[in-house]
Image (cartoon, rainbow, N blue to C red; front, side):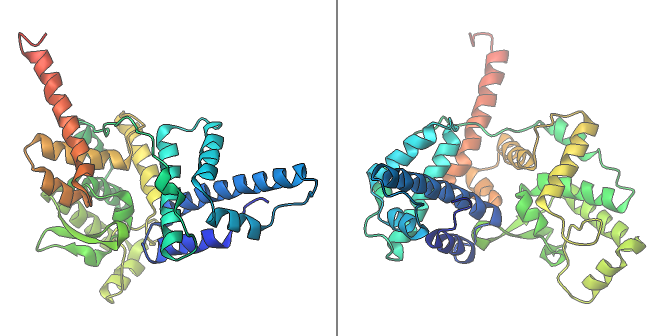
Length: 326
């Protein structure tokens, strides 16, 4: 039963997309985890039929019934099955989180009488410090694009905006021109769950965006984009070479290109610039609550991981500089 399509899974994914406003990527990850669970249930049902001499494939209806009436013992069998794949601790934690959300939804809509996940504990993970690069490395990266061309100016503006605001790349590509407040020197960001927040734009990023728009406006290849904006129609802030909205994947590809040109670590990602933004703010005395608001974190504990990074830097500096540190 390849590419198992269980109705209750599809209903849950619709709920995530339409009511919880999860991104398509996140919904796909949840869907992949739940279809893996459905595949496990299918294999178990078919093995049970074979041993009873009944034969035949498990029906989707039977899989859905098993899924909605699952108890903690069945969930533990599935988790033991996953151990065979030697997934990382973070991947296992994500799969468990998917099941938690799924069974919480089933209980809420009355499709499951008991939530088996209440008896399942998520294994503790070692906290990984977010990766950040130095200010000097950021400067090197930002100076790499050739901003004499329309698309080079766009790339420079993208990198400046990511570092200036700390926004996610998914938030960056959703920006329209109308989201830019030139007088207030700020951007309106629609984050996770479609929650809006205002983030300030630094002077370097503002200049880079102004230069990009001026270069774009003067380029006859993008006359349609200019007309679209002047007609008051929604116009993406950052466009691709065809004049459409730029994708997150394209931003990653452009970053890879400039990392190679600048001789920087190829593992640096757009999210690294977000981490660097937060780390550099805290290094220079910003308070944690302000950084939380700027990043769009719901919980302060999510932002607190950056304090561990800055504390470690202070420890390293102390160990290297103090005569009686060791």
